[in-house]
Length: 80
Image (cartoon, rainbow, N blue to C red; front, side, top):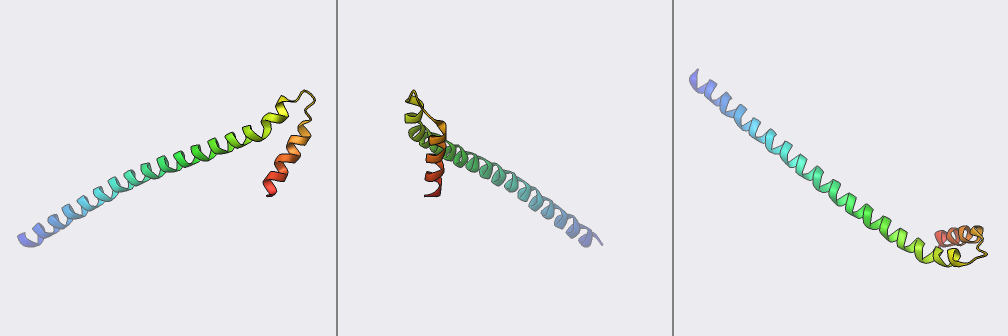
């Protein structure tokens, strides 16, 4: 009887350690994925903002600027 009880306790301890390790790995991977996605999103938004700045700056500098021209120009660039 002692051996059986001892083996079940040992088994429960090993299962507990495995579950704790799996939980910690899950937390670490989730944090890594969130940071990686956040950095990629920030870089994508920065690239798009710089592109829009380059494209739209001439339209904003003109005194007689018609923003419908800018909108049409951006729509044409989006199709390409």
